[in-house]
Amino acid sequence: MNAIDDIKKIRIGDILVNRGILTTDQLQLALNEHHKTGIRLGKTLIRLGYVDEFHLLSILSEQLDIPFIQLDSFGVSSVIVRSLKETIARRYRVLLLEESDDTITLGMSDPTDIFCLDDIANIFNKKVNPVIVRESELLDILDDSYGETGKIVSLAEELSDEIGEDSVDVNRITQDAVDTDAPVARLIQKIFEEAIRTSASDIHIEPDETVLRIRLRIDGVLSEQVMDKKRISAALVVRLKLMAHLDISEKRLPQDGRFNVRVNLKNIDVRLSTMPVQHGESVVLRLLVLDDGVRNLDEIGIKPDLKVALRKMIHQPYGLVLVTGPTGSGKTTTLYAALSELNTSDRKIITVEDPVEYRLPRLNQVQLKEKIGLDFNAILRASLRQDPDVLLVGEIRDTVSAEITLRAAMTGHLVLSTLHANNAISSVLRLIDIGVDNFLVASALRAVVAQRLVRRLCNKCKLPASNIAEYVDLIDDQYRAMSFYQAGGCSQCFNSGYLGRIGVFEYLEITEDMASALRVKDISLFTSLALQSTSYQSLSTSALALALAGDTSLEEIQRSSLLLDMNN
Image (tube, rainbow, N blue to C red; front, side, top):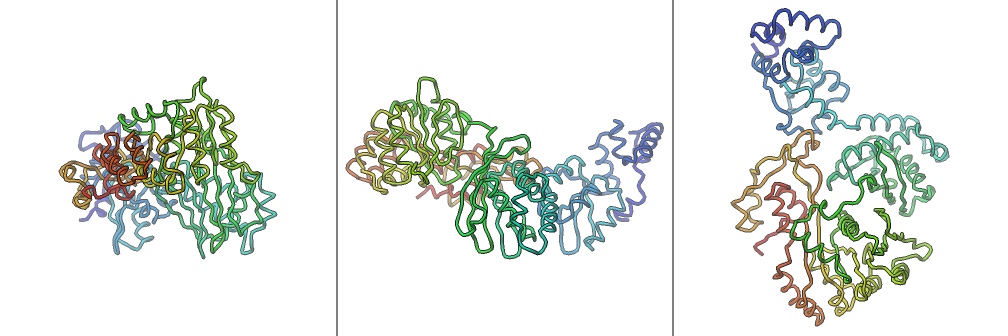
């Protein structure tokens, strides 16, 4: 007789009485409560304290010969979970775990629910293999897997029905600009709520030929939701442009703007960028949670020895400290961590940014307004006449801004700035490449921090790595016999195996010998001295140190192009 036949005959109360776990009186009381409330007998027994969930499910597993699994270690796929409609999954308290051509594996908190088994079998027209799971774990995964996606789809359908087959009524959307109950407003609010729930840094709204893609960048990786409601894209774009006070009639040119929203009791600063694409306008929203505040140097994840060196450098009275890395690598976070330490009553600090991302008291923060001629160069020249002690330049963009920044660093000012470069050594060479006099670079530059962000392994589900062989040719011999970890997957990390990000840092302090090599433009000698410097530690070495500590995985640092061939 198979497990399903056994289910039809099981009486959980009788089993518990026969095993001496329940008395007859306790069972009768539980049955009375069950009939009065309608709550399943098993759950009623747990609520009354007669048996704990683990013990009950273990007995059911043994009695029915159905596996009892811990979902935290199963590696649940959200994509597979969402193959079953959310309404059905929540109605029956079930979780779709695996699907093949002729069978499905169904996680159940109540494996005795025959109606559920029959219904699911009819929906998929496949054999159902039940497994027993904890209801609390099941509900957590349902919340994480579906999230707000069901509500987003529902609101998208409502907006689509309102629009109809015709084009978007701009006047209607404009009139609804302050109406928070309008379908387009509720849809945008729900998208923001989902982004904040998942700690997304960016929202991408991308129209395609027949569908609309909404993608969230979570821990540096895009997660996609596709909807067949492409025609709502224009309504979303118009509404977002209104929120950012942009020209809703201009669809041919890119536009940039910003606005503030309040989501789940958090104040969010939103930077909006639109760009015309083949099937409409693509919108990217960069999210900055203002309530999170500015981190200090102790909170950004920099290693203790590098932190000591950087802290010593930023307390020098003059010179340039560069922070380099690609977009989204955390450069601004590092700069403001330094500024928060320098922000005392005896220092005047001026920042020149586009845009101003963090707001700190006492700082004189200047926002670029190039339309009226308030560009980097104009502000930098004016800033030097404001008697600053510390100057933050958001980004060195060209020869003129580089020269002004470097000359400021030579004339009694500590200057912090960013530059787009691959690593610390190449950033020094890039300053020369953009046309800055090598003597000026040698005289002003004091230190360079290069950084990246990698995903942090979830501590709840990370596993000892079983795939080190894949990376043997990419790492130095000294690491090959060491232990690493790999991603698992649980409800806490949305089944990705990763939760949050951590910084990978490279630090190079410019010595007098390096400066001398730069003055004579001996690039080969400078590079050699930098690589041999005791202060220098490469991004690859830092990344591997994080992997050895169990903070990230070899797979992740390879994905981030940080796992380089260290033997070369």
